[in-house]
Length: 180
Image (cartoon, rainbow, N blue to C red; front, top):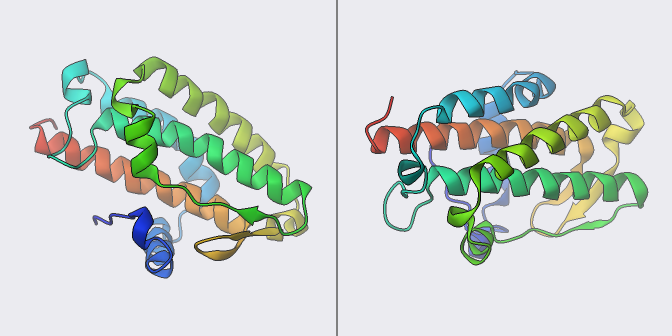
């Protein structure tokens, strides 16, 4: 399953993107998916040399390193969004152009160990926060500028599905490079 979620069409593709994510998640427990993500990610990239980690799948596509840095930044973004929703009544949630972030923040030049550490630390913190929420808190929502109302429960599901999506992307990139 390959879905390019370009910022220029994010609003038009919002429903299709959310459906894709929810279909990927299926009936899996989003807490379990998130709890397993870091170990799965480490296993997927074990033994891959630095040059291969930084080689794009093909021209105009991301490398494994770019995917990993995107996952690190996603932890930051999701954490901010959820905390904003918990602290403010119906806040605006701003989307962002992931391709601009990847290019302008030089994802492919980032340090792998630092990106992994960001994912590890923030994932633990985010899961601890999420597990401590009651049903009322999980139903609090913000207004996403591309997708409309988005509850913390939906964000919890989307994070897990986003993990699956990008782990599949890493596996696809590895196959392209003749790994695995």
